[in-house]
Length: 509
Image (cartoon, rainbow, N blue to C red; front, top):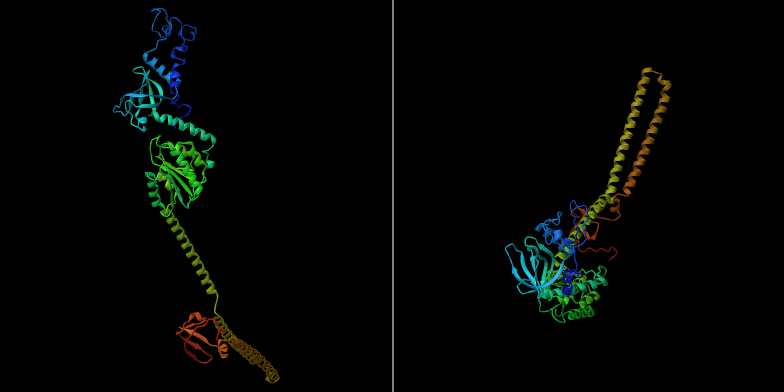
């Protein structure tokens, strides 16, 4: 990028030339102290004797005229002049005809720039030469951006060239810089005006030449990335007189038709003059005013146009512009596959959680028949335990009575006096035992009646049946199908049967 404040093929005759004609300080204008003199030197060059008394050449003064002279060596003189030139001249632009071109093995380039009045030696070193965009030849009119220097070994002043371009491009580059700064100051390039590109544009518009390579590059990229994306080509010239106006008109047509989600403004590579249509102000303003996001892809990576600054996004090439404006089908397929995989894994995990929860609930939920069977078994167990307890208590009572009788026998009381009491006690004990046994028997009968009331046999006696299929109880009509062999347990006996129909509605005939 060229600094507009220093660029100027239009100002070249009043730039470096004017500066070389102005009064500049020289090494001889500086104040040099005279060793041991104790006095300050006079300011400025001396009249009459001039340089001789201060540089030590001895001109016009004689050998013994100035005993305390400051003597310059040639090398020091050249160094001072070189520093003076470096300090006095910034990078300048110089226009002239290229002659005496030499290309040594080192890769550097040496030549002379001349015009009708003068000439100057120039050096273009290898690192800068590699950036040239054209092949210099003798007789070419060029513009060089260079610093003024001095080649000490020969004492020749020369231009050390940083950039070199054909003279015609210099005027274009100056116009480019002036327009860029103008539009930048107006705010046309501000980031706040940039519109984001849609992720999935409904249609893609391409503003370019229908016969150029750019449109084929764009279609090739779109065919690879997203073949189903519709493309509308707004044909226009992209080079030559009136091309900028056609490009701006094509943007206006796209805005009026409002059929595209993104616009591509593209063309292939070329010189600055070839790409000049994209550096016109009307194109930049049309891009800035366009409500549709615009991606520019003009030339190559090193080509930056005014349209690139005004666009919502700049791509280095037409192919890159197509890639930035279109979704990638393969990436979308991979993302969808990843989302589907995550969804499947989540669904499987949820189904497994539900299955585990259902299994836990199923284990907790027991069939009523199992509960009845458990109650029956519990009742039988309680009956056995009650009978065993009763037998143990009766046996314990008998042992105690035998012990008492034995103790009575040992003391040998008068049996006749206690016989009646013993008989009464014996009757009471037997009555108490009979009463307790009767209560226990009544309790057992009561439990038996309660058990019988909830017993499956009791239910079967009321006319119900328990249906089995392959040894499993049938609870729903969905568990059998016509033609299945089933068996039914009745209150007394079993039946074998075959299903002729299975109606889920119990109220249907």
